[in-house]
Picture 1 (tube, rainbow, N blue to C red):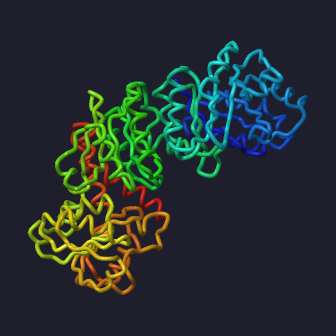
Picture 2 (picture 1 turned 30 degrees about the horizontal axis):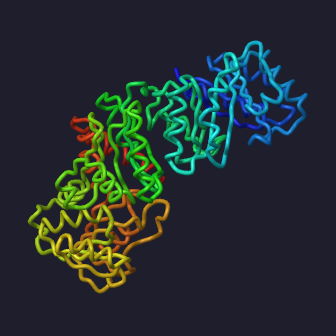
Picture 3 (picture 1 turned 135 degrees about the horizontal axis):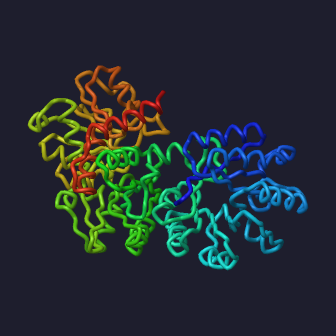
Length: 509
């Protein structure tokens, strides 16, 4: 069993005791006692900490990380050995020692198992790929490596280590490596570290234990779990993990949906797909694709002679990738259906009601492509506005509509306005794609941004008395279509909608 481990970094004895009690309530399997964070006098209470953890059936890992190795301990070697012996005699289950320190001054506990670790907080050293094999030469030792990936593609090294060395610990730190912490139970990794709360992590990229359970359903992850994720840059704001994981749980589907931070360039995205295809043992089955990768994804699938849905081909962008059982890829675009259904359902109108409606679409990226396709199919009179006029022209030519610079939006008399840019998205919620005083009460305003639920644009529309369509309706509709493609099952729409609304309301409170 992979240990769900809370990393505790309190500086006082009382705070540490309180944290251990909380770890038990949070259903952790183990606690890492970072005694290098403790005040020197409080380090002597280590036996009390271990005893309390045992009373709550928590495994204990005692770590005394030297300042030269990224920790906080700066005492003499005699004090180091004294504390390690204390931990061993007090009944610690594991003692974590840096590999470099162990080689210089070996410590062999009588009772605890050794975790031999190596860390690099800046990059991925080439030596880390083979280091676990060297560490396993020490009897009964558990190898651990943790590094900072430069891109998500570096993080596959951590997954390879867990796959090649069962029972090891391998962590890619930071946001680009988050998936390595969550995939650990699938690969039979020894443990994964999480934080007690959002401000108490001991390494970059640690999410909270509550998130591991409430969003990612840690207890349900096993070797048979199918993997899915959302590719974007940024991606931390995405509600997709919450909505899809909640839906998986609702229908008892063994899936895990992850946030995947992929840098904007096509090369990084293309290499990411290649890394997945080279590792069928990961059992990746599907991806959602968001800004800025919808066109990158289309190119990548075409380059591999994959299947592109005719609608996605026409739009020129995809937002869904399926990994087929024969190792081929298929691409789809569910933004089209999500956006148009969002408009029809929210406004209670029919497709024919959009005929000849003067419409301003702001933006020329992947989402704009899908929405322009839908609106022109409904015979609305669309003008594409974009900061880069050439991109607006290219999109307009595809669907035989007009285009202009976004600077000229103020002169356009629109009846329907659709924001397909990221302006107004968390955390830049003060931005807005339209000028002040542009909106009027006879307009319909549709913002594809869903985080926050009420963007600055929609608030301005409310003040002007205009009708509004928020991005949540589009998001839920397109996610439901993706869910069908991922699972071949009907999506639990009510649960998906309630989950996202709950999280968004919590963020705004």
